[in-house]
Amino acid sequence: MPHLSTATVYPGLCLIEGTNLSEGRGTALPFEATGAPWCDADGLARRLNASGLAGVRFRPIRFVPSASKHAGAACAGVQIHVTDRGAFRPVEAGLHVVAAFLADAPDRCAFLPSSWEGRPPHFDLLIGDAAIREGLLAGAEVAELVAGWAESERDFRAERAPFLLY
Picture 1 (cartoon, rainbow, N blue to C red):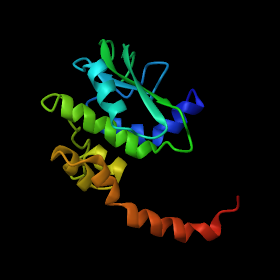
Picture 2: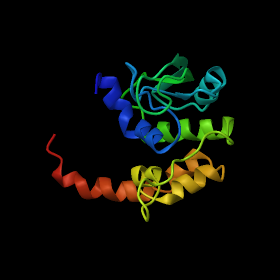
Picture 3: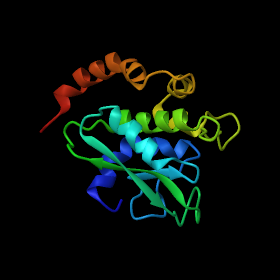
Picture 4: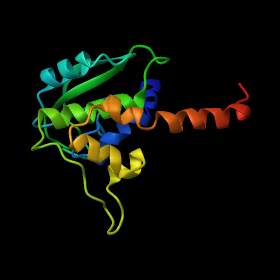
């Protein structure tokens, strides 16, 4: 990963790998830039900034990835700027990005099928189950999807607390 900012956004923006969107591979901003040839960058940035996510701003960007999805094609999308690492929630931000693309272009934005027969779609493997993808496709609010795992997260944090050394 080329920058600390890349590592900061990766836990959530890696979800883009499970879609037909460019995750910025083949650019100087992998996982910090995401888009597609058919994206309305300005509209997408406005939608994401209006969501009021803490610790992050979205800037319209245009780029041409030299590798991976849409290699050689002019893409438009957003660049993710983390403004407060303590407040930033990367997985929630990644879900908002996917939801915004789906809302703006439901006929063009898609989840990739599994690469192997009998395995779940890649997005499901990245996020942990099919329910999140299905919720996004059904138009569920991201906050509703995130609230669905809040209890499990609390339980995990309590269970791991005795093992934290610092």
